[in-house]
Length: 479
Ligand code: FUL
Ligand code: CA
Image 1 (cartoon, helix red, strand yellow):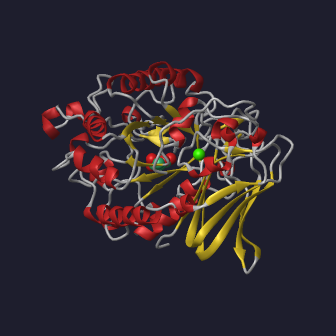
Image 2 (cartoon, rainbow, N blue to C red; image 1 turned 90 degrees about the horizontal axis):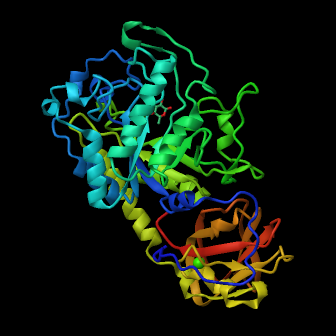
Image 3 (cartoon, helix red, strand yellow; image 1 turned 90 degrees about the vertical axis):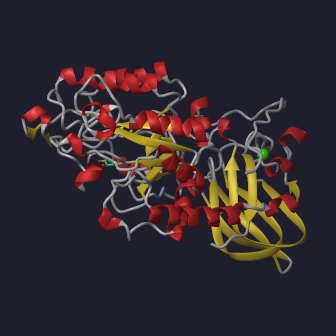
């Protein structure tokens, strides 16, 4: 939507919120929709996905590392932020931490003066996109891993990242743990109890205290949940509400949930915990030359966009820097193609040409008027009187319009309200059902064949309370 400025209005008798509602930090996060992941470490140079933790750190030696090229690429693609693997499972730290020798401070690259975290965070700030961090809880290098001493190390690292690298929009807590590792030379398997070992409430407290606007990501949120697959799609429906379920009756924790339930979430979930869809632009998370010809196509990225952003979730797309420390040309080309398609598709919102009416307007008050769905602003919405649940909004066009994508948004501060909806189009003198769906939430994109009509109707088929619809858009594009 073009106009994303908040335009709050004082209006009487606001509908009562339904179920869990988003916090301010979650509402801000919902506006991002598409952002990137950067997997970069010693693995990039050893051609691995999971380093064992014994690797020669001097191998980390990008020949032409350029944070601006990386960030400019992300920005060109339309990403609103970047999350960097500051430390992956192998334990090597991309910033000059004093807590371990296993970091950029002790390598020949830039004579030990390099700081990938600092460079990427500054480049994000320069180019006006947000910066987030991934700090792997599992550490296959650290000799104290699985013991209490490692937890204080991990928390110090987290506090360091939360203090010295500017505003952080998201902190990514990975649930993965394979058990075996180098562990300071022990080379053994170490098991932990995922539900208790990391003391998550205390660990998250560091983020809350030092970066109160940062969203915490993980299998159990607290703010954003893993969608439960690494293929880049959310379920349909995909509810923003969720109650993480622990394994074997234990407290749910990162790495210890029935994660498959993340795909759809739960209609009656206890928490507002929207889904994030993480996926790589290549088969692996780290760069491998052998995958240069296996970069996702623009059309494939578009499909994932519809299945993530278009289902109310976010799209976290990984762009692994190569051994030069750059996003590879093939990835750049694909991102450029993808952005080109999106720009063409969303250039003109055909719905703005319509005269809009509703079956009912709450209190007959202009603050809830159906025209609010066409103003490009998420903070204004159409709503009805409380007891009316089967209501509709109709768009009338002077001249026939041809579209193939419909975009819907609910007004999130009042919770997720609609449970089933339908889109009808006027055809040969009567309404014909074009499509149906369940969840809307932050965004619902419906794509189909090109359809030409003079009238379109959005119909609420099932909702426990009156609807609050903030946007309806109609687009025609090459998809
Ligand atoms: C997983 C990790 O094991 C992968 O290496 C990658 O970082 C992915 C995003 O999360 O759990
Ligand atoms: Ca609006």
